[in-house]
Length: 258
Ligand SMILES: C[S@@+](CC[C@H](N)C(=O)[O-])C[C@H]1O[C@@H](n2cnc3c(N)ncnc32)[C@H](O)[C@@H]1O
Figure 1: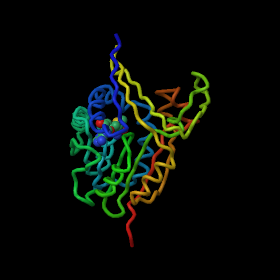
Figure 2: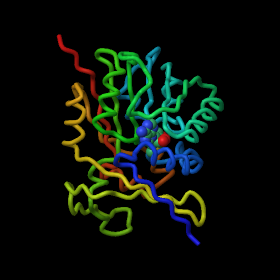
Figure 3: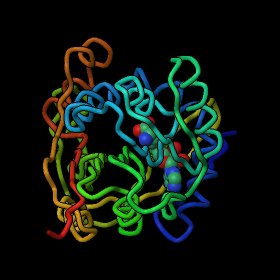
Figure 4: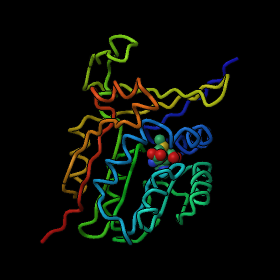
């Protein structure tokens, strides 16, 4: 029998449901992360946007298994990885140990960051939740002129639609870009087990306004495309992601009154 577990990660239950849900998939998520097309597509763009990380105080909010945190540490940043899922943090700890990198890891809710105002040079939120409260918290803990990097799946790929066919050259039909219907992320972490996350997506307009309303100035937006490494490892995603944006990355700066 197929066991189905459902987690809602979009409303008032966000922290509780996210904690349970991500604990449930931590083994699966951490195993696939580094070889995944998303990591290969996003990492170069994220590093390029962040620039020199040497001696920077960086908070990775919703760090998960720490794949990105470790890369920031390798480039000289002092990294604090924060996550609501204990099991994800255990994976991040292993990851730090095997790569010989130092990460300071802590279990907390991104809605209430356990740090003083103006503690960090950089705050990153990669493929995790974003809402007005979380952006405001990121703004609070950033130093004046500090940078926020937020990356998400692209609203084009998240919006209500479908592929024309199963082929690599299939077009994407957008049926309703503005629909706020809840989306489902279905995962089969092990045979006979399905985990379903229900979440909501945002349009570009909503994301931009949320970031600027929290007192940030947007510096850059990137819609990264795959490189030859994805072509070698995942031909389907190479062709699809070369034509349709799967990810979007925003780089913003905490705006300070003169
Ligand atoms: C899809 S994973 C992304 C992990 C990592 N950023 C990456 O890209 O590999 C989302 C992560 O956000 C964490 N998360 C979700 N809600 C959170 C919250 N309210 N506070 C802290 N972490 C949260 C989850 O536990 C999970 O590890």
